[in-house]
Length: 351
Ligand code: TXA
Ligand code: MG
Image (tube, rainbow, N blue to C red; front, side, top):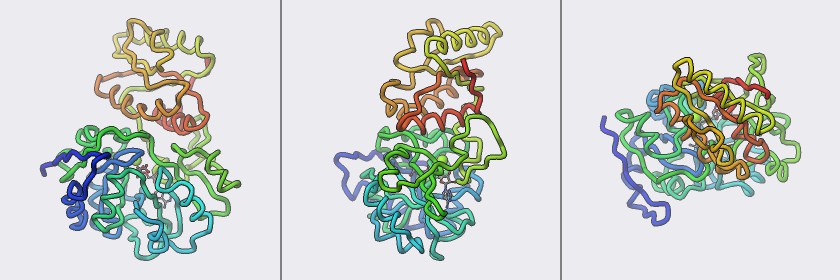
């Protein structure tokens, strides 16, 4: 199958730009499209055949449920039942935007979309291309991140193309996404609301609407502990992992950079291909080494925006060992460190 890449402009978007993509979705076909978080691989959420195509194209285990993307809160009672008031309160405050809520599903949502779960994940994206695609197609769009299963999520159309070329008919290319990490997932089906995946919307922001919201304990773990199982199936898989072995060093920044440099040099001396994951503030500390700055420590959002792209770069350069710095975990930093620790398989060294 030929994969067509269609440029679309966020600023000057017209209905006709998404017309063909919308038609493909109505036919049960797949289209990759930008959202404000990461690129999604979309299919009609109410068609089991479209859901199966998504799993096949990504090489994703079919028990890992998909997020259903909507363009209007009116869709909530169509897809979900027993909706708590808190769902509407969250929607009012954070939609359209990078937040997904889990609710009890209605029968209309097929098991193929929810991985057999009785619950459904729903999100209203703010990206104008995503919103127009949902509206113009007239379908609710099931969309996981548009990466091949196990690779970092795509933050630009080219990442999608690398992973899925020949497997899907179309990619809408809206340029780089603004956020770069997947949405915050809040489960509203339990006794207390729970964050199953940290994202751009922080737990502090959620508390303003839901004072009792708590993290799924699996999110907080700092060491590999297989007895703590994440509630979101997708958070259990090895994910975001670069091909090389990534180790993160935590502690006083000067000591960390010193240690990272030593470890990197030792592996280079053994003949390995080595890369360093650093920040704008510290990249100058690694003269002579292959270094990538992921962003500015003072502005966590810049780190979020470039993390996945940087992990992909390490794969492209064939890095066998990657030594990285820890980042502050305030605000969106919680999501950054969650992804980074997973990418490192919880190899964190205290300096
Ligand atoms: O920002 C995002 O959320 C992006 C864009 C495309 O919207 N999508 C995304 O989808 O990250 P995906 O499939 O890569 O991640 C969905 C996560 C997985 O961890 C999955 O297990 C979890 O949501 N999930 C989906 N439905 C669920 C449910 N009913 N219960 C618990 N977890 C669920
Ligand atoms: Mg994903």
